[in-house]
Image (cartoon, rainbow, N blue to C red; front, side, top):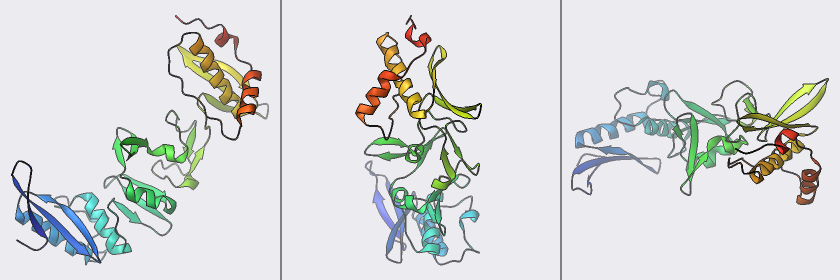
Length: 264
């Protein structure tokens, strides 16, 4: 058997060949191949990359007909350049790191997130990014306080305009609560709560976003009591204990359109 190549069989009995390489004490699986020659070629290329310099092989000059997956390519080059092995396609920079979903889609993260993304692979379905944890899909943006229902530009924004840059300093949560929007009137900040039925219904306008969030919760409960079957999300209001929440809930006034709404 050629160096770096291992013979194996599938459950069906069909043979295949695995390639792997060891570099600085790290044993790296390179992939599975249908021929010994391909597996050997992948092993040789991996060796070339690991012992090359960035001017010869780098992430940007990934060969179009490469026998190594792009993920493995990033892993090898990061190990060569930074001396750290990650199973996921991470490349370390000085004060942040890059996570390559593919050659053209690159996410940026603070080093504080390195341990998490070194252990959790990022996947993409449609426009949604997620990781898997205990068999559940976790929306990546939820790690940064961005709610599932949030709309970019209204509820949150990427300060530098780059929505692939998930560094904490680049994410601003404009509105943390569902159904709440903020605007300025006569130099005063107003928080408006709305709820969607067959169109948007204004619940009311309030002095604080916490009051508006509680008003949304109250309106949702009123509508459920009236027989509306829609599954309204509930706002969790941080920094308010149960007694204060209950007092605000009782005091907050709700639009008559909600109080008089008739479920069809």
